[in-house]
Image 1 (cartoon, rainbow, N blue to C red):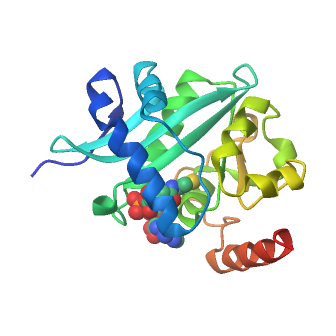
Image 2 (cartoon, helix red, strand yellow):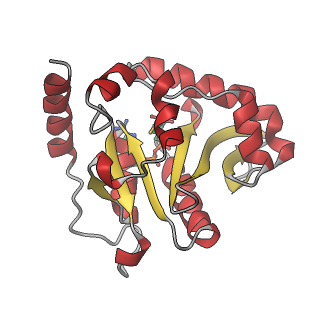
Length: 209
Ligand SMILES: CC(C)(COP(=O)(O)OP(=O)(O)OC[C@H]1O[C@@H](n2cnc3c(N)ncnc32)[C@H](O)[C@@H]1OP(=O)(O)O)[C@@H](O)C(=O)NCCC(=O)NCCS
């Protein structure tokens, strides 16, 4: 059996666009969290423009993630990270995020890289890549980015908090502040799973009041 390959997606991967959207949506339902909806057309556009990364094994889709540029390229976000259930807990998300992170640094060397997520795995991976948790005010103010949240079930919360906070945590990697530490070599990380879980619970209680 062959290895899982992580590569830059192109037109030959359009056939997976529909499945990618379905797995993103069903995984969000299973987790009981909100998620921005993606259409197969949007995924195909990302693939066509060289702004998507796909993981493939034996011609089967195993994982996916795409790049979005905001505020005229000053910010870059990695969105739509998904690992097919059959390939989870084997380090694949880590591999995809590492790949897309390095690819973004080459493509947009000046840009700050950011993400918003409710997922512990993503926070853990990002912390190892050198991202720091930040308030939403430190992320892009490009209205098009925040418009992407409209299809999320938590959008009313975001609106009611005037786009200053929501269920997601904002994380930012600033290449200007980047240090020499490499992936998996950061001993003192801000990511402490128990603390993050507790903070998430507190945030849920406060926000939903
Ligand atoms: C979240 C997701 C991408 C993780 O993919 P994965 O390939 O299983 O993750 P990895 O095996 O690379 O794990 C990376 C790290 O996160 C940890 N992790 C994985 N799933 C986790 C979970 N559900 N909760 C807490 N930690 C988790 C792993 O233990 C690993 O930690 P380590 O570096 O200390 O070993 C995958 O479960 C998924 O697609 N979920 C649905 C979509 C989703 O939540 N996307 C993110 C939206 S922002």
